[in-house]
Image (tube, rainbow over the protein chains, first blue to last red):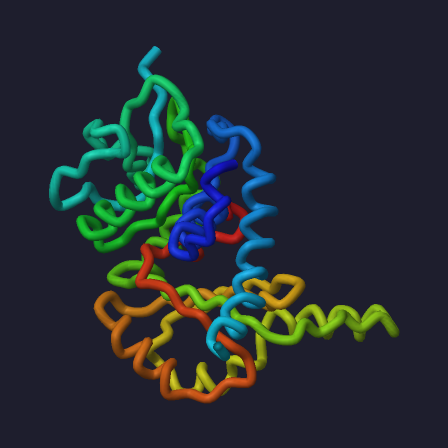
Length: 60
Length: 205
């Protein structure tokens, strides 16, 4: 998914809130998107990756 | 059959001003018992893209600015009709909790602690400890009553947890000033204020 290729932390935060949080309505409601699980997995990986990147960047 | 609704949020009163949805459609307040679903009429589910996600976020923010009590609904929630029977009580309680409030999100980075495996009791206790994120206790003490409610979400790995704090609207600068002045054994990355994304009833998250 091209939207997660960049290291745009603010976009990742928006994605995590909008796709991963909020009221989930059951029953009559469907998710109109495919591959959502993939997005979650990669988001979590990138949030972790940012931890490894940022302290190193600061030391320079 | 009426066109499907793209639901952005729940509230107990209509927005104070007219709000447009992600596709420029008018957002209507659709009654569902004593709740209102704030939704736009659309003819198809939104395609997942960075732009669509940002648009949903923007609509929820506009609605939050126009509604004192608002629970955001997850992206892509399409409904032909809205029915919360059986859930109304807990949703109304959650709306009361978030009324006049907003959310700060903390990503907590540090050394992950392995779960105890020696006994069932030790295992459960280590899960409870991970969920309570004790490394933030000095922050909790400093923030005091600025924080009206807290939700935590433990993760594995260097991102050890996400912590969500519900604060009164407008108190984010004070929250961030307080956070900056507290020494913690973990690194904490704050974002916000957000609408109260993480304060829906547990079974509906």
